[in-house]
Image (tube, rainbow, N blue to C red):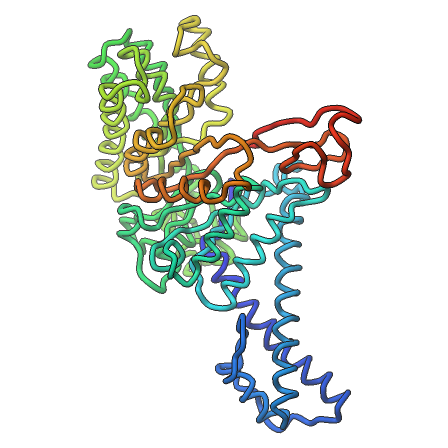
Length: 503
């Protein structure tokens, strides 16, 4: 099984906060009864008596009718709020620590997981968002930066993006935490291709991501939602190989491109033939527990073929930059001609997957593949077959998906302008990274400005990379000046600190 994502973590956990608050109220009333010889005079109306971040006169008044004292009711209410805040803090802390220490994936890896949040404006939802950010900010043992679950903050104008939005303070906090810990990443609900699905108050209509970019939303066979669905599988095309095989002939490149798109499509259908014959009992959690859309209608012995129609089937690509260099001598960061050809190449794949969707009534999508290992494997294969070619095969890795090469000197604004249009084409997933030098915690306004620039350019999913220091003696990972914040040793005493980028 691949990665798992919670599409509305704040909404889901808010229900638990409500239950915890009710228990806290009852526990505090019980303590008051034992200490003050007070007897409850009725039932608490929990439609009125709810958790609040500040004063809640209505809730206190309701409690006063139960305990017979306004002063005691106010104290009980404040103690209950403090109890649930501490419990939520501990729960979020446990979540982050457990996800980074439970080696349950492939026997030796922590779960490949993601949580999406930021949209719930209820007091309970806001508490969850605040405390999960606090837990990420605090880090793991020795202050190490937690990698999982990949944390994703959902940006939406009217919810958290503007100064007068109810969750704007949490957006600011997300920027502060990301400036220190690299996470959360940001998904842009306001991008037109995401906004078309958005329905106020319906968290399943908010685009969410899994891992470093996977996106599932459109559905030709049912409800267009981010929850209870997933990507069946994806195949990645080695674009530079096709360009080299075509010897720079663009027309020949597109002939080869079509051939490999068809091959990818046929391979995924071949894989589907095997998987769709499996039964519900083969997937006891995903299908057996009714997690997958419409799987609750199946019996344990039923085949899963009928519900796989809600999955997405993706064809991805890697190495657009090197492909363009092989075709016309420049990549899309270097010339407008290359940019237009790049958009044509990715746009052609999107046209093909859209056509498959219409003809087959299956959710075919275009993927800006997260090719961390594939980028190296493809490059080694290309170098072996075609030799070392400057700008194409001369580096250990080809450039991931449609990114401008990281080694190319370019300002953030231009990189955003160039990469943004590809996000609209890659409906199976995409991401943009901006490199920020120095310590962004000392310039949070610049960090937020970069996030806003990517949002306003209609990028769909993005993050900011920056240097992260690590003390090799005590293991602390974070921002280190001349002294380690954890063990307080200085660089001149026992060796240098390591400078690294975690992604």
